[in-house]
Image 1: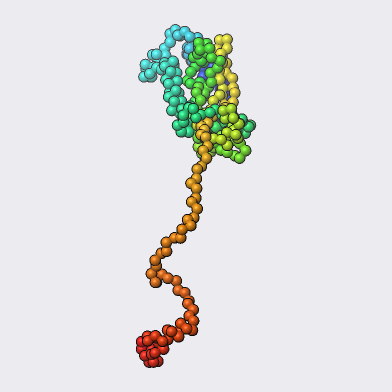
Image 2 (image 1 turned 90 degrees about the vertical axis):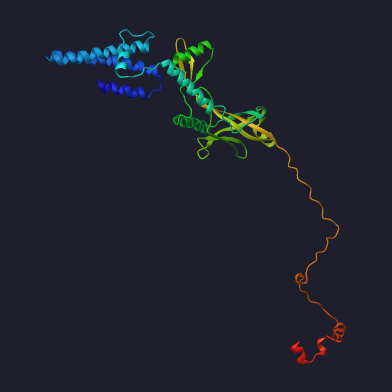
Length: 335
């Protein structure tokens, strides 16, 4: 019997259900399993073991009482009579927690988290008039990348898929009072930790991920505002202002409770744009027709050059008194 209950408990673990519904299932299973103790007590009495049978009956009655408390707590809105839970909490020095107060605190923490990491997170500060929504197209590979990325973000608690900490009753009352169609598990859009715009030549793709090293293609931009992406790329400088995850599972109101439906997560992108300006270059001045002033160099800076002299010049030079031709061989040597 206990093995069967353990197997059922394992099967329930594979099902994604609300905590209150799961506690109701456990209460029913525990109540049915409790009657197995009554059968064991009967067998002990039948075989002459009255003492052991009495102990099993006492255990059955104690568990039956706690089953009654669970039924009153999880199936009705009325307090249980003869509830000894406050006495047990006092003995064990346990501070009781108000479920509604805990839910409100959880909602407050979720809102603070979304204010820090949510839609306000952008890739810089831009003016609203310089932002345009982008129309995205998703390939099967890109859709799979988005779902995988959301699971990674939920695993590290970067985003919470708990309907903002609200219970089914809170969601049902909200849907009735505010006349909303549905409430998403992702209460508010959450910006990606990393996102970037890449021009692959013939199209613009949105890349994102946990960081730059693990980024992957998430979507292809087809239109920016009312303009095709390729045309906008030729006229504007483009940059992603923000890329957020939205959509996913949601709950809608039924006749007496909420019903949960599943849909894939999606991506929403806003682009910042700036008109391209022509690059103005200064004209190159034509070379001046005036000759440049000559530079005065020392004799040591003058390049060596070979000069040619006529015979008359050599003759005139030989007639000079200081010419080497007027010196004797010995005089020329000692000079």
